Length: 66
Image (cartoon, rainbow, N blue to C red; front, side, top):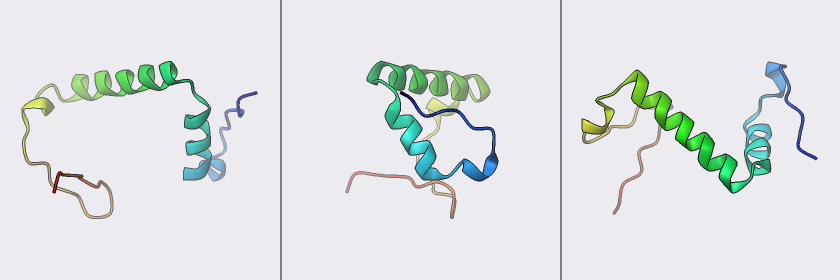
């Protein structure tokens, strides 16, 4: 059985989100990634043209090859 969806913000821990994500099948995860990608491209169509992403302190980590 999958975990239930909660609408209580106090229950939205990173661990709870990870458990929910891990409960998805591989195809559901791929669909979610596709939906997020579509959303990002809809909001900012030129994002693919941007180069040299820089990290924003405390928010996003940019991973690069060494």
